[in-house]
Image (cartoon, rainbow, N blue to C red; front, top):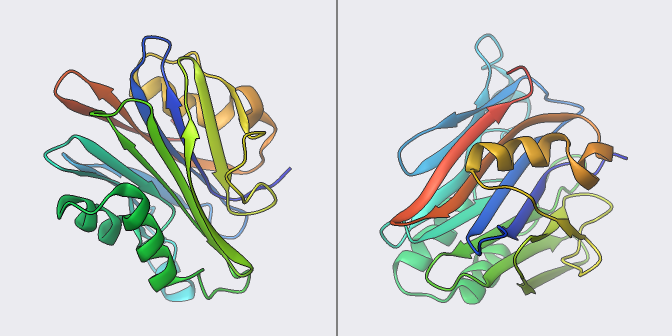
Length: 215
């Protein structure tokens, strides 16, 4: 089944919060995840830079850390930065998600692609938020996380933050979280994986990781 992009919030079995993102694409698979100190970006692979002229939505920061690395914002588009900036200013995660999604709305591409988001805060390890704005509505929800579980929302088909979109989470490192969302558990049945990125809570902030399917 093809569900497009995916964001997920999870708790490791030892209670550390995690945010994960996966690019799945049929139209623009020639992309990669690029790791920086406090962010991860999705960009075209070398030789495919002109793809951004065909679709301006395919390059963006998919993860950005806020609040001195205590909060991770995970999304499928340009909403990453304004959500992180609002949280840096002290706006609660729910309000930052709702305000930004309402302002930017769904992507105006050929598919009216929803904007999907996650916020995880290591200062409140059970506070994992999922948000989505679609052509037919907007949902922002704090998911009831517990150790060893994850929740997710996708751009197509599974495009509402529902309790049914869950499973077991046996991950201890950010790199493992990337592999998990690319092809383990329920995600093994989700087609056309391209790249993944993850932010997993550690003692002083978040460990970031990025992985492409070619690796």
